[in-house]
Length: 255
Image 1 (cartoon, one colour):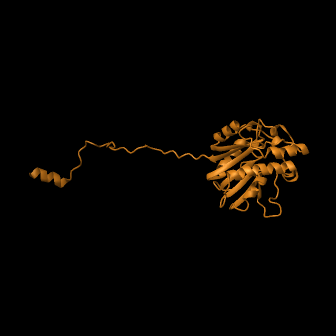
Image 2 (cartoon, helix red, strand yellow):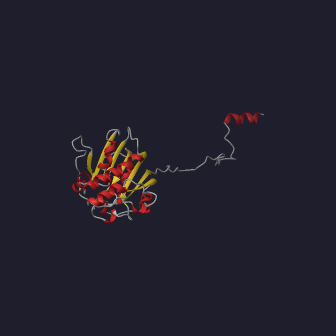
Image 3 (cartoon, one colour):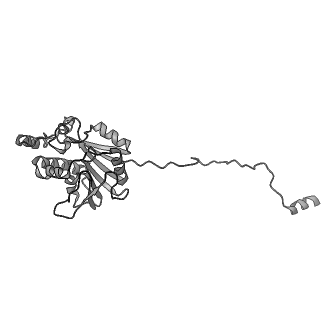
């Protein structure tokens, strides 16, 4: 089930650990998508903290928040960019979104198949979606101290397999959040130190989250009928004499 939007907002905007998470994940996202000028960027779940870097350059930014979670006005003090929606029916035209971030949305979904189908529908040609989910082998999925301790955690293989079943092509993956999921002062100091080192290669299993970027697979339409033209098509009446006019028959008799 989805977490309440009030608890999610409190974690990301009112705790030191939440701000560390924001900073660590944003850095990875900006590296993946450094330029979104003129594009439509959206988020689903509670992706608002990850969308802020795109407000100034993207053509449009929208944050879709599922009904069971609840919605909040975002960004605070500015024109609202958030929309309350159901998981499988978003108020957006087919193929309209260029970049999409899904965070605290997939692992807590009541119907992951319907959600993935809807994501596939709204993603445009050449569009990309970034899934951020709790890592099944990491510490964050085992602790209730953060929102990543709720819902179904994934391994990288599990997530990629799920995406492939729903017509997505995984392109890149990142392991992130090597901090200890603790709000205690000593834990926060260790978190700030660990997030400053690159452990993606040495200890990917210890990461708190798995991030997978995928594209939409569009298959070529199948053609009906013959695949190649027949050079000498069969003539049903071939061999039957062609009819001769009456005048031609009379001229033949006089000769």
